[in-house]
Length: 120
Image 1: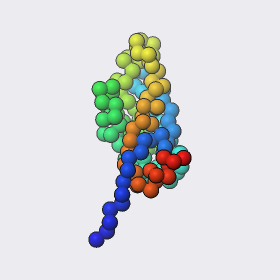
Image 2: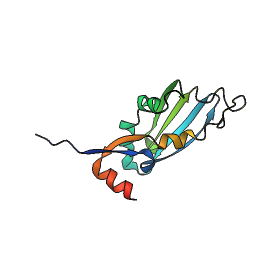
Image 3: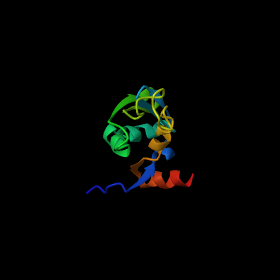
Image 4: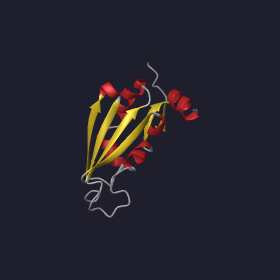
């Protein structure tokens, strides 16, 4: 019987960096793997459903686009900006903080990777 790999949770900030901005009422968030080896993990664990759950109450929907040549994912967070930069009364009307917020999301990772990355 095969033994299941032990898992831990780790914030995305240990695995990726991110950038975000606005496109009207939609926040656009790019998530880029810090190492190409992390991309398959991001691809598997950072699903549109998980991102929507992470931003519950803040967005109406999430689309994900895969950019394997860049080891990156791009997310569109719909209705995230209260109308968009020119009409929104939100403090972050251009959606710049969404990248930092996404990096706080926790995903399951192999225990050995979590131990190694959380020490660095």
